[in-house]
Image (cartoon, rainbow, N blue to C red; front, side, top):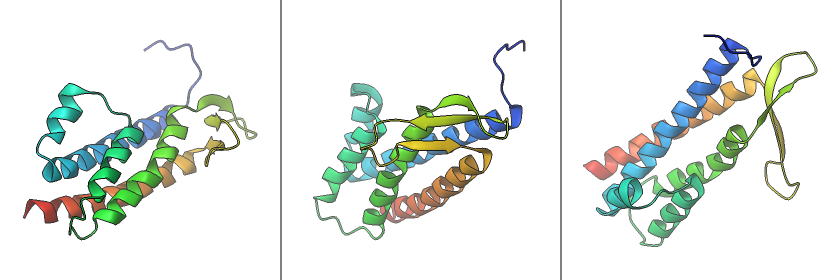
Length: 147
């Protein structure tokens, strides 16, 4: 492939894995909410397109049903905490770091929780590991609901 934009192949592979893992995790959240509300899957996939933030708000609304599902609140908290990090990764821009490596750099309004962040290789690894742990926990909640 003849790409004229400078990039590090290993870095972009790791970036792709991070995005894939988050999408998989978000799919598990959709599955959980679909067990709570039979109509949710149809709404999510066919009726309206929800951002991760909107999905988080739907999840929060379902928590108000006082469901007795072990781990559901923690699952919500994990998802809520992951969204700002995912958004900072998605909306970051290529930059050359001090060591000469091409990375993604995120900068936004200082009032936001995450307003400046350099997505180095190790930061992407940390994100992947965190989302992987959250996915494992969410899958356990989903298994409990399915029984």
